[in-house]
Length: 96
Image 1 (cartoon, rainbow, N blue to C red):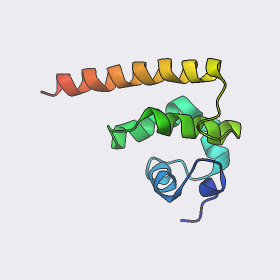
Image 2: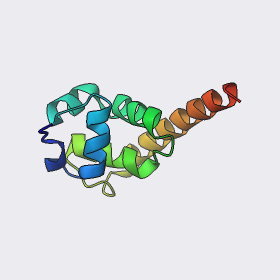
Image 3: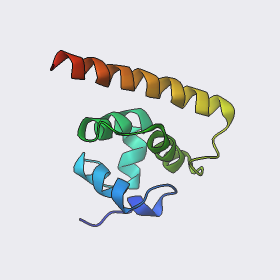
């Protein structure tokens, strides 16, 4: 499938492939879905999805290098990541 995702900052072939796998096939679609929902979709297929991936997705949408987010934005992303990780961990515990 042809995609323009890898033309965005921070999106390499691996992340592009995973985004396509979760139904996000274009830069416009990624922006429409938003960073939080895109990350949750990726986390569903890759429980090891990390904070750096979240930074990268946000940077792709906001046209910022993954490690150049302002401190306030980093804090917002870190808070979301901790919440998403807690939800994932709760789900994992429920299946044990």
